[in-house]
Length: 239
Image (cartoon, rainbow, N blue to C red; front, top):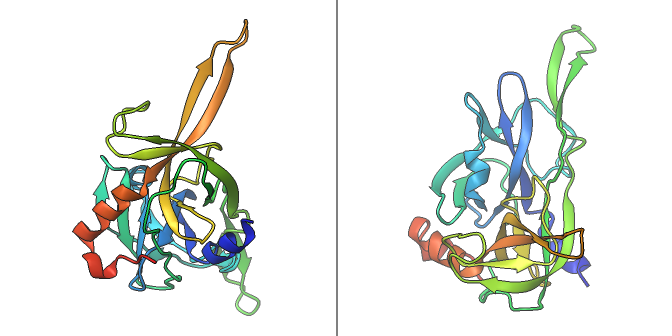
């Protein structure tokens, strides 16, 4: 049931890397929404950038290859912490854009979370076979895509549960670290939300409380309101 949708989406998402002089890591996930290289992610992914570090793009990992010598810079055009949405642009190696659904997902609808959780990129030293010089390569062999089929279990108005100032929804399954900013999509492969956070609650049960964790997605209505202000309606792709 989910296989067709995943095949449609898997070539359009990418990990957002941070590069500093001594290390690099995955901050979250992004996905393209236009042929001009515009992409969406969560605002808190961008805000997690350490001092003296840069945002970088290495394509549709892991399908783009394991080793690379450099990354493509990422430009941030708009960052809205209140909506937890950020719009950026990449000028090289643009992937096919995803379409935004025309309407929000409904209660009980099957949807999919995705992204790059628990990624462990590393530096890899390679010796040139002729002149024996050492090159430092970026090894992303352990950066893998993850797909979590789930169900929308509740729609949340503003300021409900987590006091978020945007419309959101709960998913039965929670996202993992590194999946923030990834698209939440329906069985047609159309985007219905953006992964934003998790909601953890404890329910009293005898002497041992029951812990429940659900995912929180930014609702499509917020995306439709956010993008035209920055891109204009001509560049917003809907079915």
